[in-house]
Image (cartoon, rainbow, N blue to C red; front, side, top):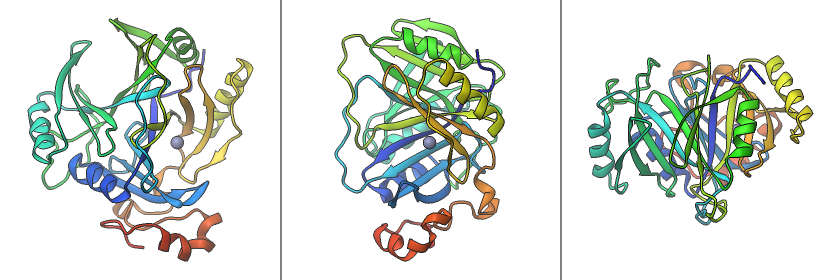
Length: 312
Ligand code: ZN
């Protein structure tokens, strides 16, 4: 069993509009846009990162907005719900806020004794805010005070036809089953970061998801260092998973593998982090390109739609 995984690092999803995406996550949810860059494999598409002040692992939600891509279809083999943690007693604040901006209905629910508020993003991406004791420092905005602001991820749900192979994989990665309730199995990693929970939802007869706008593309787990990452890569490979080589994503190093349920997993390093090419005060305010795409900057900038609070 591995001991290097700390919990979640980031969750990356697909969107149909960069500007809508930017408004929803920066202004409605009040996350900080910590990086505006491009998809390193397709530099004419943005890669937008939102998180806490510096983009600590376990707080980072990222999007690839592909203009006008079709909506995805929800189903199994994907991350169904990405859940953020909010302070106890904050649900009425958020319920009112989400209703007020017309983002649709926000529904209070309960899971494992925790109060949740479930709602949809601009592409019907599914989210929950979960009331939890969480001492992480939040990013705040003019209209979202610290007493209600999002702390980072609480957990993520994965919808699967068969939970057993995913329980086996997550257990190998260092998680253990901490609770079950109906179709939901919660796994938690001990001594991890605050985003240390995964909920598997077993839906034996549900249809497979189809990727598109609003779908989670992959979910990334945090390791502290490149050395830890190599140990994870080697152990997963020995266990029979087909793991990619290490990719340099400028802000972290990444390896990827497809899980038995179909969900794409990434293991990403906490080092070097988002301040490697911008200082903390100006994170996310300028379009950053990786060195290999810098020569195409003029063309890239023409292709990308302008975004609020982003210098091109
Ligand atoms: Zn990623």
